[in-house]
Length: 472
Image (cartoon, rainbow, N blue to C red; front, side, top):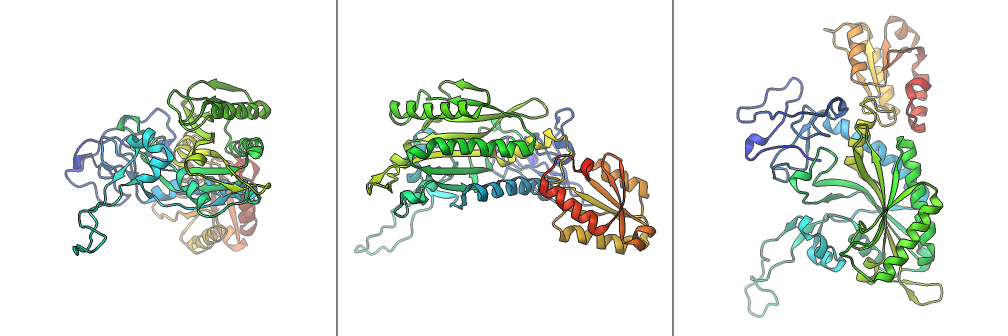
């Protein structure tokens, strides 16, 4: 999740957009050696791997400075290539959130370090956080004032996770048992000071998003919620086409809380895994410092393992933030907290998907769904109408009317760029208000009316099928 770079301005590694000037003197390109057959070369050049980028984006030392910056700057098609897939994945999640009773929230990026001290993260995680020291507070010099020019403001930290902020949301007003389980989801940006040697393309960044969610529930709701988390994970991974394996990580040597609470939490997770019915393995001592967890591991097309999803039980944060709700018996009770992520880092998942699909994105995730190609200049106006119909339907439609390139070469160029479909329009199609459809594998799918094509593409996109070209 970061690019390679050296010290000083020469570490800037940016390739210009097509048609723009070459990099200026003093901004030399750095050599890189992508993995053989990397699909990132096809759709995410310079992202999944370390090193400079092409017209999609670049890495710069001034963005979280270091030998590897840990973040990227998008150029030209970079935001399009990245965020089309990202929005597709997040839309899948938000639909599931609505169906499963989650509420999306947004929390600040900066918090006082006192929050992290209260949560316990400061003791265990402060070295991995970006710390900011605000300037001295400006105040009146009047000796009768309660303020002093020497008074310093609290230190601030960029949030590395969302759970303490979600505890503040729960605690900001009295809660009742009728509100539980309370399920909060957050896609906010997170920052962690990863060591430069740990950074790698999209798979590990210093700034990233998580499909982060926290469930506050009563103790007797815990098993049902864990089963719901596992079902959520299974549903999403089935759509993405991933198989996965599960691991139960138990109490580490450095932990918060009491042993009997840890034992209770581990027993609940173990029971849920056994009922889920899929094989799992035990990882002794590999739990988070605040609770045991279920880790979800997948492999990309290059055989590299990635820990993406996670389900974690936490009895500690409700204690530290004194979280309470009014129970059915009319007495205050303490909730249990479940930390849950399906994708984990969204950027990491996009990198894994790029490799897994070999650059051939399924239609519903594809940033290059359809290319409209007029046979001659006389059909350009009609081709633009077809493109506008695609865009109006929420599809991605581009137009190639380059007069210097033959029709055959334009079709081939679109296929090599992995456009799912090419829509060719000539004099016949213009007169009949149709398009001639070809798939990226070279198959010709015949002539169809524009409205019929748009409708079918929308159906295939909504169904999230992996083989839209075959099912068209």
